[in-house]
Length: 325
Image 1 (cartoon, rainbow, N blue to C red):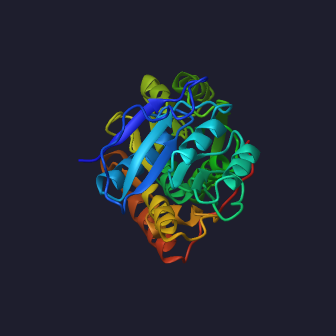
Image 2 (cartoon, rainbow, N blue to C red):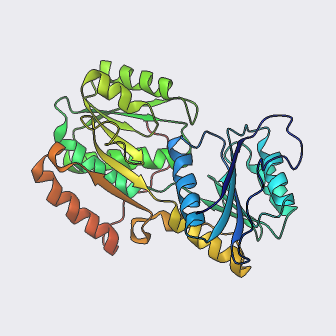
């Protein structure tokens, strides 16, 4: 058994009010870790962090508490409260307030911060990571290429930040390796969590001719299902939820990043580093999963060969942070 304390962080909450229930006593070697989620933990990206943190707690490595639905204005306060409570590692994201998050981390040199960020690490304790499942997205693009009848592929993303751009551009590169004449449509929904808006964006792309959708955001597959076309998921496996729609998923696994940060925090090592490399396929941080019955049989061997090349280092998936158009 493991203990996890959960709450939604509300504006005006009193200092020290983050933990609603006192966790049971833990062994001394368990690291106190807090997760701060700007979106609900059901959001795809946050769910990957949350799942990894829960897994580490279940393994007896950490004591884990978390808050979800934390607004950008409340985020620094949540970071401060968890640091004040003695948590030695705080996991979250700093996209909405890079400067504030870094300044706050400097006030707590004994606390390690592991933040999803488009920026570089800072100081000795502010570590960063990117969501680098671009290799899996490239391979998913290879599988998608022969399935389109129109030759037009749609993509629905959150906000055109480097991590999102890299993923979408990698998918497009994978498609073009197999289908150089492919055309692409793009839609950004302007937020990290709005499934209805992602669905609307997907529907608009289908109306414009796309017959394969790459869903960087939750909600894209709903549009594909409604219009009876195929879709690709990102970060987690959507196929069980959409068995007749989602044929491949560009998976991302946060546990390798988390394990590296936990090891540094326990050792008292400098945590102000970029942990993004633990997202790479060779580190177990990302991979493609797909339904063999839903893809062209002849595309599998080429994709598998490319995956082997990525793992061996003989092929590097292009990293393109420019906003796709």
